Image 1 (tube, one colour):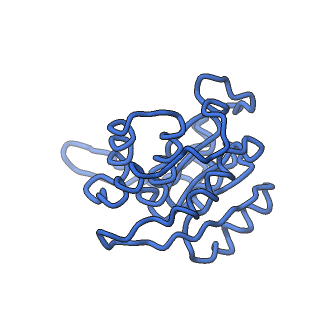
Image 2 (cartoon, helix red, strand yellow):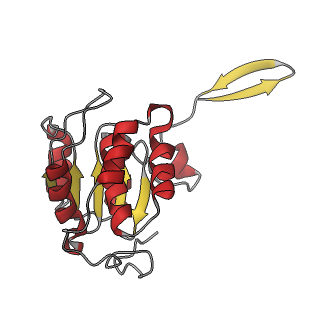
Length: 198
């Protein structure tokens, strides 16, 4: 419904369900909560709801890295299956305690999947796309040789008032020296060849 005003009076005018198509607008894409591009072929977000599935299809994802211990909902599993998306689950418990750390070994396993460009384009997500996702992205930034202040700034932009010192300490102390990687193998410095058609 739209509102029309006539000399101070407000009247509701019903619209047809196809009004977007009638105006040539086409389908609307709704990204998941806290969605952002991390790097070429790497995206992050909060938990994708069905309203975001069309948007995710436009990314032509090959993989999803799911960082929660809960089972992936049936509707999300069906979406992934029908779109040929492989789901990698790394169950990291939600921790609100100030001195409970993200498990180092689980992050290392997730990084192995994330750094493998055969899995790109990939979406990383947890429930809200703040803490667990932020820690994994922060570790990627360390591999990319970002300075800590920039890593923390990015983390805080997503976590906002809920930023955790324990997460930042985890990222600061995370040792990347024994990870087998090529730091710029998926960086913005290279053009991503799997382009999106608009």
